[in-house]
Image (cartoon, rainbow, N blue to C red):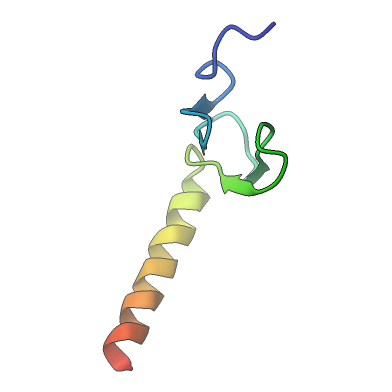
Amino acid sequence: MKSSNRADGWLTGRIYFNREDKRLIIKRPRSGFGYTMNWGNKWTWLFNIIFIIIAVILVCVL
C-alpha cells in the first residue's frame, strides 16, 4: 500500500512532480486515459518555455 500521493509524485491527482523520474510524459493512472508532464524534470520546463515563446511570437505576428 502506498503511503500518500505525494510519496509517488502525484500532487492533487493531476500534477506529477518527481525529480528522480527521468520521463517527460507520464500516463495518468487514475483517469484511465490521458497524459501529463513530469514537472520535476528540467526538460519539461524548457519545452514549455519555448512553446510559450513561439505562441507569443505567432500571436504578435498574426
